[in-house]
Image (tube, rainbow, N blue to C red):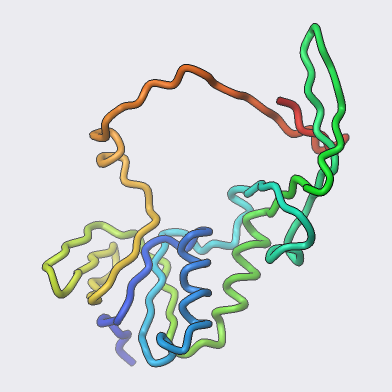
Length: 178
């Protein structure tokens, strides 16, 4: 059987942005009969990153949160203080858990496909966009990308930063250091 190469929508990047977009699309009846392709160079099974955020209550990611912190610690040679952050918690989601949960949400959707391929080029011809990968070419009327384009980033206007904040997580003692 020949694999499909024409889609209504293509999402480049199956990280947090791409998977959350695909998940939102399949929940909306508008996309029920639309073909959607997710492209990523990686299989998305490794624990390749974590996402951390502040939140009140349980939240959308409660089933995949791997760590939570109820306190933060500010410390230096001249000052140290532990603070409760209620009603907030600082939470961490592991990449492998996120990918598994979101791919599970998508696996039974007949209109969505995932292909592990490296995107080589994106050519926007107005009404159609052609994606060339290391294995094939695909086309769609709409393409969303969350992939990082180093060349584009190096040509952006640079903004100077006058203040830099650093923090680190002490996972053993469940504290955040700023």
